Amino acid sequence: MRMSNRVRRTLAALAAAALVAIGSVSGAAAANAAPLPAPASITRMAALGDSISQALMTCSSLSGCPVNSWSTGSTASVNSHLLRLKAAGATSIVGYNDAVTGSQSSALDGQARNAVSSTQAAQYVTIEIGANDACTRTVAAMTPTATFKANVQAALTTLNSVKNPPQVFVASVPSLQRLYDVNKSSLSARFTWSLLGICQSMLANPTSTRAADVQRRAAVQQRVNEYNQALSDVCTPAMNCLYDGGAIANYAFARSDISTRDYFHPSLSGQANIAAVTWPKTQWGS
Image (cartoon, rainbow, N blue to C red; front, side):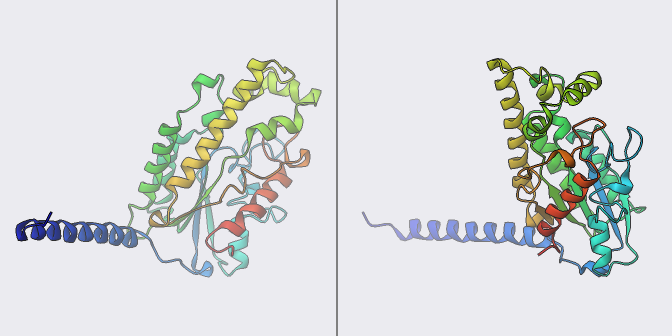
């Protein structure tokens, strides 16, 4: 059947409008993406997230120890992202550790606001979040994946809302199943997990092989996997963001990488290995 001239003109107009819309979306994404600064030009960076970026359990007390952080730490043996930037020429760099022990993704936007405030004006921001969204008292209490994704998206939007948005690096959530497997045979670890009530969604009944407990642990790890997919989805070039591609999620933590204070958080060498496996995935790591 032949089309009338009127139909042809209508279809042509619709096609032209679609091309304009596509171009507008692409142009907006390109406008949002900030040019990559030279590492030597970075003078301010910030770490967002939870106790992992606070380097909890790496000092003599059961508290945060940000000098040992994989992100902003100053301890030579850790060789943090900050120290690697300094070695690349950012000799005057200052690091702000906005991560808060116990934080879930719902707290991330507030931390992002600190990072882009006039006081900090971070040019490079690292994010490590998600473990506490899955480490709850029960499986039912874990943060829904859609909520987690929306929380991270909100924080990225805040980071990109300023005139000069920072470069953002998002680290994956470590495998909670792996952290359980490494120390489940340790009597000291099992006693500590119970005494401190650590990550009971994963670590409750650590010696049990009952189907319900095996399925519970699998459900927690599945949620972590979903969180990592969500991080990959929202961390895009248009948001000046790079995801680590699962570098931490796939890292095979050894016992030496885990603190003997709680048998769950990264030790000093664990922090060093997190820095080592994530740095090559950053904007300046290749």
